[in-house]
Structures are given as C-alpha cells and as structure tokens.
Image 1 (cartoon, helix red, strand yellow):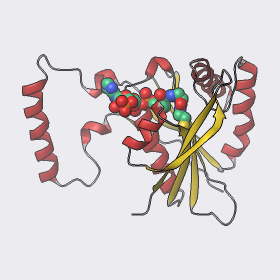
Image 2: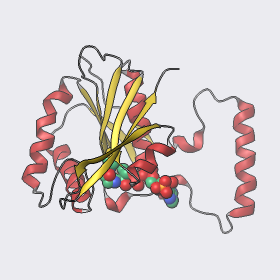
Image 3: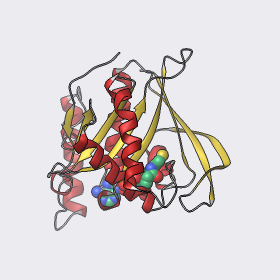
Image 4: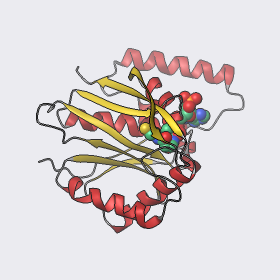
Length: 225
Ligand SMILES: CC(C)(COP(=O)(O)OP(=O)(O)OC[C@H]1O[C@@H](n2cnc3c(N)ncnc32)[C@H](O)[C@@H]1OP(=O)(O)O)[C@@H](O)C(=O)NCCC(=O)NCCS
C-alpha cells in the first residue's frame, strides 16, 4: 500500500535546471539561452512563468471538487474527438461515475493521479499511472488517461504531466512504463518526443467517439537508471 502527501511543483522547474546539474553546465546553458534570446527573441517572448501559471499536483484522494474538475476535462476531450474509452454522446453522469469508480483505488495507492491546475485552482489536465498489475509484473506500470483541456493545450502541460507520471512511477519502485495511444495523434507525438519507444501498431484497436475505428500505437519507456 502506498500513501503520500500530495506533491506540488510548478513549471518554473524548466528554468531552474535539473537537480544536481553542475554549475558549469548550468552556466553554459544559461549563456546559450541568453545568446539565443538576443538573436531570436526580439522583442523578448514571455517566459515560461508568464505563459504557464500552472502547477502539477498528485491527488491522494478524489473529493467532489476533484471529480467535478476531472469530469470537466474528460468531457471536453471526448467532445473534442479524443479516443479515450468513451463514445458520444457522453454525459456528465458517466464522466463522474468513471472518476468516482477510481477513487477507492487511488486511496488504496493502486494508482497515481496527477492534475494540472491553473492559477485559479481549476483542473485543466490529468494523467494516471496504474501501479497495480498482475503479480508477475511487479516492476511495471501503465500510463492512462492523459488528458489536457482544449483551452490549455500546446503549453507544455502534457509533457509536464508525463514527467510527473514518470517520477511517480520511479518513486513507487517501477522500472517499466507502457501505454497505448491513437496512432499519429497529439498523444503519439507527445510520447515520441519524450523519449518513449514505439513498439508497433494495432489496426482497428478502438473507436473514435463518433464510431469510426482507429489504430493504436504501443509505447514503452524503461525507467532503469
Ligand atoms: C495529447 C495531449 C495530452 C497533449 O497535451 P498538451 O498539453 O497539448 O501537450 P504539450 O503542450 O506538452 O505538447 C503538445 C505540443 O505543443 C507544443 N508546445 C508545448 N509548449 C508549447 C509552447 N509554449 N508554445 C507552442 N507550442 C508548444 C509541443 O512541442 C507539442 O508539439 P507537437 O504536438 O507538434 O509535438 C492533448 O493533446 C490531449 O489531451 N489530447 C486529447 C486526449 C488524448 O488523446 N490523450 C492521449 C491519450 S493516450
């Protein structure tokens, strides 16, 4: 069983450099960034802090507020055409039933749920790490329900949620992550861009919310140091 106080960090980490970076590496990176800033960014672009007032948080319980926010994001994704288990028409009751159904599993530490919240505390994205798998796969976890509200896309939240999921899986002692995603989708590009390995494609794996079949691509990532 795994219990943990919620973990919070912001996207500011992007400008801080990875923990343990050598001073020389940080100074070199800073110099490079400053020279790029002079050459390419005139007038200067807003910093990540300005454009990304979001934080990533692990939920250790799913209360009413969390279920409402998670449902809002799930509904937006399904209505936006994402193939994430559900078909249209997709009701709020069905979305809430889905998240309510996971709350005990989250409380038992069988899965990790991370959310991205904006500065008003509204949930705009989420990802789940399923830790509890058959007993012959104790080292493995699945990544699922990677969802970002359409209003908050292309700002790095998907990548930040994925990084949180990977760190959470490592913290839970996992060394292998697996997922499937619609081929050639935004999710596909996200995982490929974050160092995941593509295994292959399964035709007609699932349905789009409107009923058309879609292929899925299987990805994995080794978390071994
Ligand atoms: C897949 C999904 C989670 C990605 O979320 P996201 O928050 O938009 O992801 P990111 O912002 O990290 O990256 C998305 C793109 O924005 C780009 N981006 C990130 N920050 C950016 C910025 N500040 N300015 C411009 N572009 C940026 C990334 O480079 C990436 O580009 P690419 O798609 O060309 O590779 C989102 O599209 C989604 O919820 N889709 C529907 C649900 C779904 O299909 N989920 C996957 C199920 S497995």
